[in-house]
Image 1 (cartoon, rainbow, N blue to C red):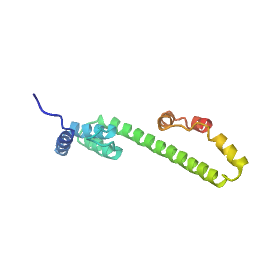
Image 2: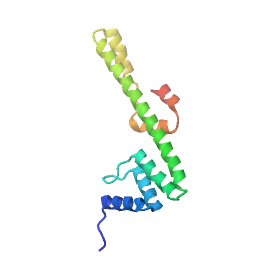
Image 3: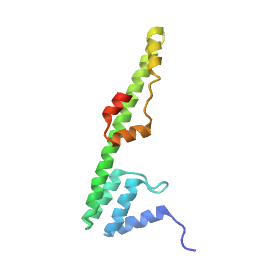
Image 4: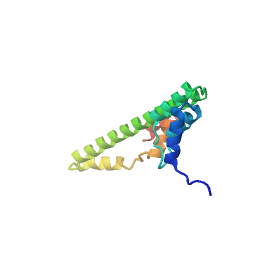
Length: 141
C-alpha cells in the first residue's frame, strides 16, 4: 500500500510550497539541484543558489552555509572545466603537431614516444582540482 514514488510530482509540490513561503521546501529544492537527482532534478548550481537564497529570505539562516557550499561547488566546477579545456587544447596541439610532422620520421618518432606519457582521466583531474594540486598535474602530465 501507499503511494508510488514520483520524483517529478514531489519536485512540483516542493516548488509550490516554497512559492507559498515554506523555507524548508526551498532549501530541499536547493539541495536537490546542488546534488542532482537522476531522472528527476538536473544538477544546476545556479538553480540551487536561487532556491537557497529564497530559503534565506524566508527566514532559514542555515541556508547561508548551504549558499557557501554552492559557491565552493561552483568554483570547483569552474576549475574542472578550465582544466579539461586546457587538456583539450594541449591534445589538439599535440595531434596537429603529429599531423604536420608525420612525414619527418625523426620528429614523428619522438612525438610518438612522448604520447606514451599518461594523460589524467576525468576522475583524476577532479581529484587534483578538488585538492588544489594543479602543480602536481603539471609535473605529472
